[in-house]
Structure formats: structure tokens, C-alpha cells
Image 1: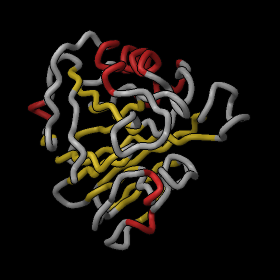
Image 2: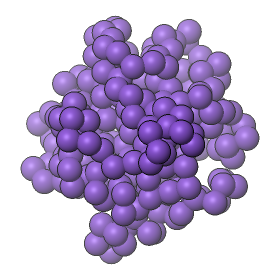
Image 3: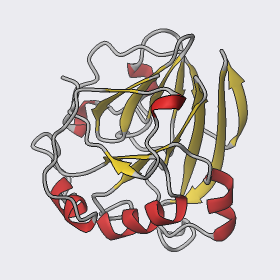
Length: 212
């Protein structure tokens, strides 16, 4: 399975039979999707920086609600969380997706805005790869991301939703998360190729380059 970062909270998960794109964005986000295609699109919440499914080619199946799905050999579980610390009273709901593709379970937290409850942790605790927002503002910040990582103990962590030269929003930079994790040198990867046998024994943080 191959993971590429398309910018912001958008990733392409490419398996042997199917592909998934998470949280596609419109042009106002600052990044460019290019001519991205997929079999499936997941949307965590209704915002132009996360819900631009019409920008994805390939006539994908679009998921924007919680539930259990099996599409083209991909198993997806969506569970409701919130976009803030007030049970959605400020920014509404957020959907976390646990996506199993080629025997790898990838958890996309969307714009999670609060600490996870014990029951929520249990629902997604078997994630191999965690795609976690780290830039604050409308989602958890670096310290909140570290808290979630410690609870879930994934094999691989990939940060998303942070400040870059393309982003106009007042998000926090990646460096704050890197410091919180106690990391020194960071070498971004153009993409990540995984199979079950190559997963690390302990949690490893990997940074992906914007694929443009």
C-alpha cells in the first residue's frame, strides 16, 4: 500500500485493487489537487478545505457519514467525534475514518477538536498508521496530537493540517509538533510504501512531502 500527501488533510491511499482519497480541498485552501483520481473519497466534515469530492476524478464512492463500509476490497469504519471541545456546539461534528486497505489499517482523524474518550480510543486502537492534525486553530494542536498518539500507540504517525507556505490560515507550523515529539532532524519522504511485514515495532513519526 502506498501513501502520498496531497496537502492539508488530503492523502491518497493506493492499494492493489482500490484507492482512497481523504478530505479533498478546493482552490481556496492554497494547495492544488491536480488531476487526482480515486475509487473512494472520505470526508470528515463539511468545509471547502475538506469536502471537495467533485475535484476527484474516477467517479469515486463518496463517504461523508459514520458507518461501516466495504467497497472494492477496502473496509472502512467511520465514527462520529467533534470539531471542538464543546461537543460540536462551536464547529459541529467530525468523522474519524479507520480504513483497512491491503491488510494495513489507516486512521484519518479529520479535524478532531478534542481529547478522545476511552470508548473512542477502543474503536480505533488497532490502527497501524495514524494521520493526525497538529496545527491547532480548528483542530487539535501539537500537544493534543501527542496525547492522541500516546493513547493509540500506532506503528506509524504522519502529521497533517499544519502551516506551510501554501496555507493562509493561522495554523501552527510542523516544527512545533516535531519538538513536542522530541525529534531533532526531519527528512520528508516523497511517499510511503508499506506492507504488514515492514511496519516498525515501535511508534515512528514520518513526514511526507507535498506531492506537487
